[in-house]
Length: 297
Image 1 (cartoon, helix red, strand yellow):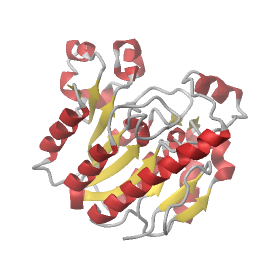
Image 2 (image 1 turned 90 degrees about the vertical axis):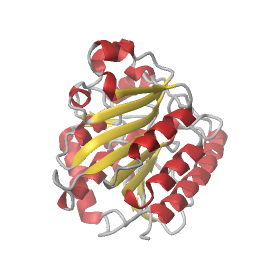
Image 3 (image 1 turned 120 degrees about the vertical axis):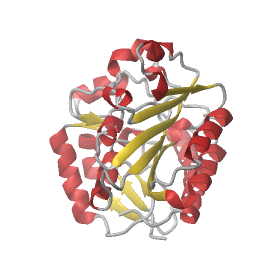
């Protein structure tokens, strides 16, 4: 199994055994939370030049960098096609399929992945955020839902509006995390398509681990059981949702990020949370080492 990669934007990922670290701290203010498409493409070019030919799970730090998953998935286009497609499975408390008029950000990248020709379907597992409720109806990008390229697997959110608009088959609602995971794995049971797995730890309960974002209800065993069940189908993976703090230079980013009401984190608390994160990261990486069919590239 190839070494894990840490894309170090924010110094939040600690003590990952045998990991290769790329220092991207100079990109932090430009990329964090969101960026223009031109800046995103500059980062893509940089990663194309500096990532090794083969690598294992990629850790990107704070969930503010979840849009980096798009760049990692796009790298698979040379190997897969519409005739030989993959599925993308995302653990996230949010849909990450929202509109963003200033380029791309951590809450909008899923719609771009769903539009890739070699991606047959995107599943977002564990959503409890009201981002998919009627109050945010117009913020969601409908096209991947209408085309049956994207499914929300959720809990605790009233999704009757989706059924009224004919989008009901793209919304799966459950009462408990166990029911959600069992239903998803039952659907996958007879599927053989390769899977790219993206894990945002804000899908986990606050009792399990602390993140920068509002959190879901899953426990670590839900993620680990899913990895075990998908087993040799996993051909690439990334992990985000670590914890860091940052004061944006951009007034626009300061304003937009303030709308998410992320709390200030004292230094002692930050260290404690990062230690918890390290344990979860290690569990997930070890599970992926046992399951991965081949390293990402």
